[in-house]
Length: 194
Image (cartoon, rainbow, N blue to C red; front, side, top):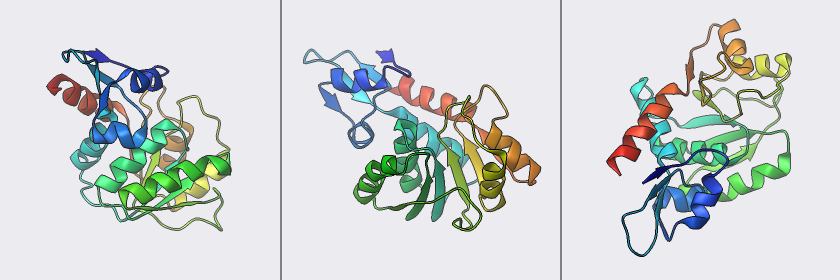
């Protein structure tokens, strides 16, 4: 089989002749199983890896959460949050139109998704924030602070470079941060099992 990473996850999705449910929902494949004569089977183990690592850190149920970012990683994060029980998910994105695909995905997984601005007036308290931004993402410190103030635990999918701008804001506010190294490990375990 193949373990596929960015920027080839979309290509792997298109190459697969069959998909697991998580890959179907997210439009992303990070694992191709090549043993089927009909062609490669595609899986998304990022979702299960994220959910498993969040659980491993003691968060077993989430009702209301926030995602920062609206790309492919945000889609995987939304599905993982829904698997953890999230019924309401706020999304902070630079481009509000990018949130629409997450709103549609939310309907499929049973989560109400709304877009919010990263300012103190529009934010509500959440138990968990998942940052789906790349490690080199630029984020204004005052906006990061506004998110950290009401963001609960931060799970940042990035593990290098660390800390990210958001992780630094959470630490300034005395809040718990988790990096994506555990997600990397957990999704790899799922890949090996496949």
